[in-house]
Image (cartoon, rainbow over all chains, first blue to last red; front, side, top):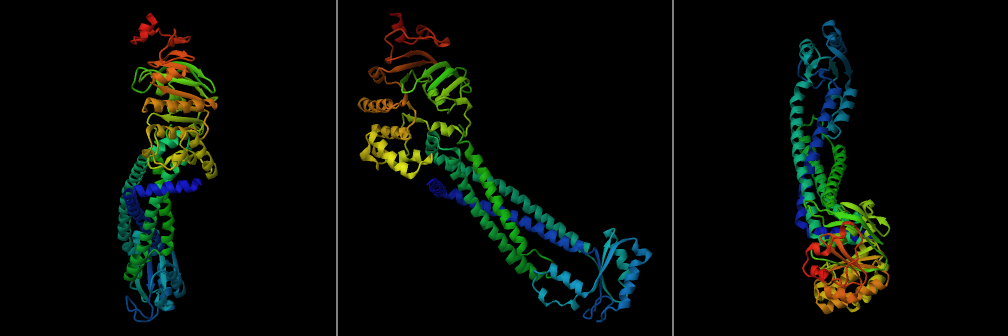
Length: 304
Length: 256
């Protein structure tokens, strides 16, 4: 009985205020899409940093039988070549710079590749033999990568020495900037959304002020009076949140995976599992913001 | 039932109090007229009883509860014991007679069964049994006020507050409303009615409390709109000489 009454009040309020409700839906939609994008960018940065930092600042790739780069001549690096590189890294000149060295054979490299690139198209076509055996070097000071390169790059059986950091810093900077931009836009839009929800609820309360006055006079409880208004705000915001969630999922599916994933195959991109973590965040943020601003807006009609 | 103890109400930005050290007691089942010029504090009195306002000074007890100590969560439940009627009816224009009365019960969570029984009963009592499906604008002023009274008493309140309920009505319609209020009073409800209508007060001969500038200047059992005797006054600052108040007519009367 009471539930039905409250829901019919909510329905009336939404219908009477339709243009305001639509604007609330749109503003929450846009703002939460930016929030979602900011979170996804941070996840992407985390994913890439994790990928590269866990490994090494400097990687020494050994030759495979399909490579002609560096010192390679379509011949797999021999055991003695690998031993020579290892000895070189252990020599007193270099050992002081190096925190740790790990050697990964084809199987290990392949395994790592599978973990990080499992959502990337094309991962299925790679076989262990394609992937270089690698000395992954963690430097005490990542800026000393050049020293390692100079002393190892020209050794026989070495395909190339790569300083990962050099590639990554600008990418991280760009991603961070994008993420910051998204966050600032999101914050501005959220402020607008909160104010708009509050205004909408005030309007809705104003258009029902006769009923509200009588409700207060005859002793309707405060919760009974405010629930329809809060639900009104929450429903409008939730519609916006659901739209934002769909937008975020669509961005990841069609843009990140569908476009970027095919353009830059060797970068680890965020996948659906990360995205599905963002969706509940957006729904909760939308609902909580709406409930707070609506109850704040209606509170002045409840003062006794 | 209602006890005011040295109650002063001062509105913000106003140096003159709306009510000034008012002390009075109203008992169960009494029918009380509250008379006085506009701005004399009648409406403030009613608002204080309803806890729509809080007193600046003094204590108010209504139905055995200290009104000042009611938390805002409890105020709604407190108000379920009070019925209120206004000069301007305050009906919901888009709801018909039945729904206007039922609305009161719906919003305090009464069951559908209770509403189906209570609303027709009360509408019959106020004499609107045949008009349950009319909209407010299809009714005369007197009928609208009957709907408002039905709404106020459908939950069987202990106290009915009426703020100039006949202010918008012609004399014969007013008489009908007064008959109704008297009937309600006889059933045990305390009725407090603020009014300007001298004819009604004189005719009814009930307890009359007269306010002038926020002070009680007269509290008379079976009184008229203007007193026939020297008023009974016994308390503090309220015992201002009527002559000093400089009210035309009343001052002459005292002089006589």
